[in-house]
Length: 222
Image 1: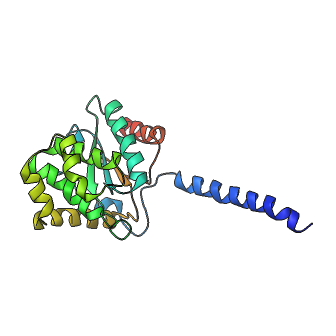
Image 2: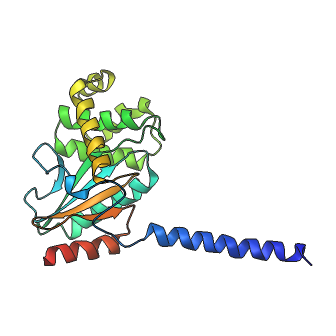
Image 3: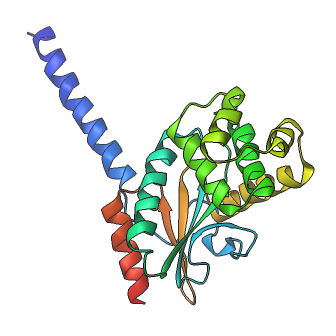
């Protein structure tokens, strides 16, 4: 009798654990997180990787890792947000590096390669290359050249940049990472919705499109 209840009980407990995980992954956004301070987010500038109108009244600042599968799905969500809600120029998206080298061995290398795309070509090349990194997870650094070509980057200077550690690029990546930690990020993706004159709205995790749209619509209303 005792053993006959073991499996049903295990199933029920498993369901509770899964339900709890779903609940906490979709928790209500707040203006504070962990021990960090969202207000410490670095002001957006022309040096940032911006998709959309740089002068948009609502800006989503995302800290992300190219090896993170949740970041891949959220990348698709934010591209959809910019294509729809950002079409009128009222929403922009800023991508900042938060390589989780403690988890993904190639995280910092991927960040360098993406920054090389931006440095050698331009901002559009960065977004194309970053999309290629996400779409081809997990990426072997040996395939950077192929991914670069698919993004329209064929310059030998790109290969040289990737092969040679640049102190300027490394400093940029580390600055992004330190700012992520300062605002309270403990994982990726971690994002902030910025509206001038209001406290940042935190999105800690890969929110679905409808949830992001709702937050963006509320931000635009203000």
